[in-house]
Image (cartoon, rainbow, N blue to C red; front, side):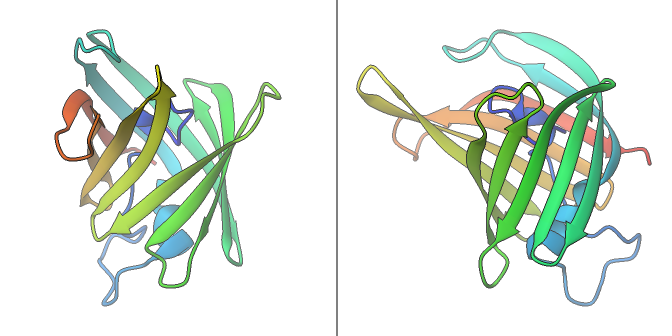
Length: 174
């Protein structure tokens, strides 16, 4: 589960239902829901051979050191013991459309991303201009329980037909 640097996104953009073991009467929204990313996760990803990926399998341990203050949630993301990025989330009224700001640990320019919360399915969309054409990407995180996420990364040229780049599973271990 990785809270994205766009290439590595598949890991966190893998995310949340409720942090509690019992489901609340009213599901959390906004940064309260995103707080489910906090903790340590074991992630496994299978990549396919596509024009945007090479086939392969990886397994990682992802630790999200998160804290919430008012309308903000910040998570310092550590992958296999190596600090990678500080993610800051904010959400619009209603709590279903959010922004993420990725601040790399190496001092590189920060990034801006979107997150759409739709029940147990969360979507991280982005696009890239290449040779005068827009290529659309997304990571879909499907929370099968408060402690497990099934995810896939896809690309599209028209936002209608999507090609899978990768898929995987994350399980919260603490």
